[in-house]
Length: 505
Image 1 (cartoon, rainbow, N blue to C red):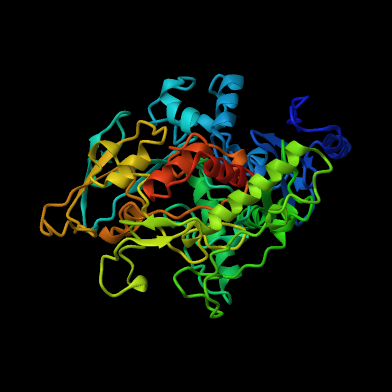
Image 2: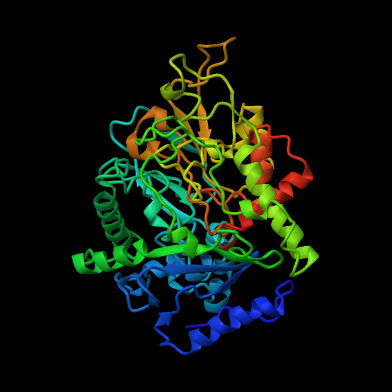
């Protein structure tokens, strides 16, 4: 086990380091095959850690074993120091250390296309720069639309089998974390591993295990190129391990420990967060009948008032107050929701479709208390996968302009009705240009084009970049995108407060 610390770290004082050093001593006292519970890993904002309800992280678990033919394990793309996600920084470090020979860069999906030579950085540019894995999905024979690649920078965006005529579409997506899974409402960005629904409290646990077992099998056969599926025992070991993990930011390098002075940050507190499918549903379908409460996050309420916790420095107290202000902004600051597939075309919000632009907050979509995903399956199209060169919606175009968008294939989709037609030209021809058709590649339905789930928001600081396609290099770009896309009109101070809050999750 390699220690992940570089000393010294500016902004972390002696008192805070005493806690960290104690954990390091514990780490050195255990087997090299074990990561101590709550082991601290540095990230750009401070320290992230994982609480495992089953005790220390046992690296002899099947999660860490190579079960295929290319040397990969689950842990190849799900890094403990990245909150069990994958940062582009980690990918770059592994590439340098191994000259691109690490199993992470296996040609099957760790390269821009399968024909890329090992060790070629240009051929792995999407993984190195944006943390993206290639996902090849076969088109449904009965799809309601037709699709073709109009921009194919790597040569494998759309491939048709000459024998079967089967069309495979390559999209590029971020690996989702394998931690905090007890809050899931959908497995994978497009829901393709949601074999059994996660929308009922009575069946949630059993269905979640079924879904994750299936996902472990598909990942082993696909990503690891296994000749045979993992055994039931191996799948069970992987899923039981994953379900015990809770990852979150535990220390901000300037604000200090995120569970101090009455705050409720960190993975241990997260592990005690109550949850059931549909909790606090923003569309009014909470199965317990509770009304939606937009104050979704309450982790840093105790920090809203600076009085009484200046003891470890003026700077730390001010930063704590900034984080609390960001939490309040996330819960309350108005934004305008317009032309969002999944909301403005959703009959749950009104019988006359499309729904006119309406006011919401960040928590309209991120409604699960202190977690931040949607507690019912609700894939959305907020515009992050659109093609800027062909984007007619000015709000979406202005949001995309704030991002460091990778050079991705662009697909033209025809045959679908316009969900948000121009009243002046309601029958105008409608063509969609997208870098990722989202759930539509799984369902074949026009109504699912571009729709993907919003991920759990805990442990964000450890796993940049952001959005499903890695288009936001950092959380500043995330906030700038939302500010433009949803007409939030944030001040620079408010932007910094939101970033501070998101970094503390």
